[in-house]
Length: 365
Image (tube, rainbow, N blue to C red):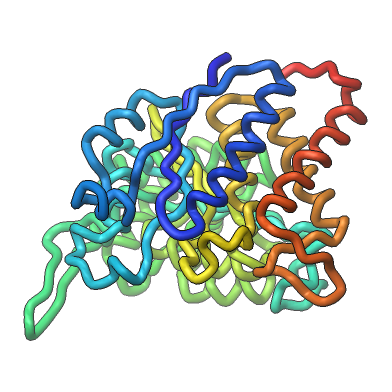
């Protein structure tokens, strides 16, 4: 097997966490006797500085030819005042749209050794393990018309039947391999587009009678994630609601620096940490690499079907946290402060240990 991956390190701490993730990826690939083919391209703000636009056609073509894309982070204060279509984030929207990445998977899993990092009580978040499945290429972020003038601004939230159907099918299929519950989040009491969303999801549910379907308004869902997150299994929702709820879910676990994500389409896939570019700590070897490394685990699982490798990598992250190592974003006095490279090396060491414990060096994918 050949893992053909396009690297888009991006801005701020993006290059640092991408470098860490690649180090882990190459190590895992070596252990499982697979080859990696990695191509790095400018993306986001650095691409604006070098080429005038956040995503060049050349970079897009390289992404098309890859099995997967690994993204670091984009954005920074120096590009904030650019026009909407010229900002780094516009390149991310274009990339998602052109690669057909209609489904964003954001896990909200609390590591047992990380309970005290959350602002919520331990008994509230302990054993929390759910997924926010966000529709990624439709809704208000892409709807037309859009714009503003001196007297008003306007955006359009629109969904087609096909857009809702394909994300709903994925939600029910994912739930089948988990705890068999889907919570579809909308605002059907005031938005016609949400009523349409709810109707389509309920129709698709008929194909999955063994899966429980629950409908919930988005304001209630935000409250319930904080009040009782263990009630959720798969949260299915639209682009803008998923954007907000996934960040709420991320913070109850303790830090956005811990959380990976996967954006999937029918032909392409993109993996990225959910944190931002954090320019204030860029270049200091202080960034938390765990989200980027966990994104590699998601890549191994979803794109390359290397399930065992992904499981060991997730366990290696958990075991590393149990040793008390913490980067600056999650550091407290009772722990040991680690740099980006120290955290990365510790995860690799624990991967090696688990690998040898479980298989004595003999593994299938």
